[in-house]
Length: 294
Image (cartoon, rainbow, N blue to C red; front, side):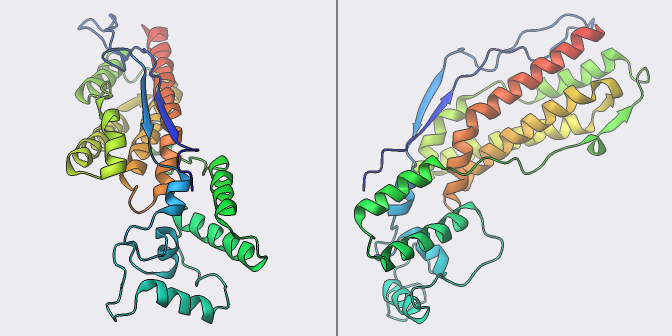
């Protein structure tokens, strides 16, 4: 089956933005940019729906997505070590269910849901006599066109903040708190983007370390911003920044689960540029607020 038809292009067209920074007098903006070289980074991430459909890690004749449905180990051709290969055991289970789907599981992730839907479709095609390599290839194309939409899991609200009445916190104090948070964590660096394709392909320790640290960086600045007292009139801008950072943290997290939930990774990678753009827009919104009080 062709596997390159639906490759995801990670086009990180990073906008040049102003991170809010102030000099000692609280009025002078200090320019920082979201990327050190202001160049577009185009990275081809070689992960496709066709790849997921065809992948058989332990070469036992059962695709990884179906092993997950039957509870067998994709890294072991004889999961229970009884001398009967997973392929033969799964064929017996299929016969018992007369071609039906495996028992339902609770708490299905995106990849589990994809696997169940794909299984049901292939069973239907098989029963109608229309299952072929070409039809499976067409299915891959179809699933690629309807990729899982990205949904942010955690949404922060006013209830998560320490809000103070307008006038109780000086503009300089709020500005300083924001500046300290933005400068303490290096969210301006996007060098971690370079390791994303490597991690998806190899899942190596070095790439894992870089991405894990990047996710921790975003978690750190979110924590700082949640702890900072917020004037009532700064709430929209403040929440926008926190939620855009949380969204991007979750996108990075989706890449880290490529082994267990590759569909989630595909969704996160596809949404990656928009999540970075959202941070840029949130920073510009905060900048507008800062300028209005300066």
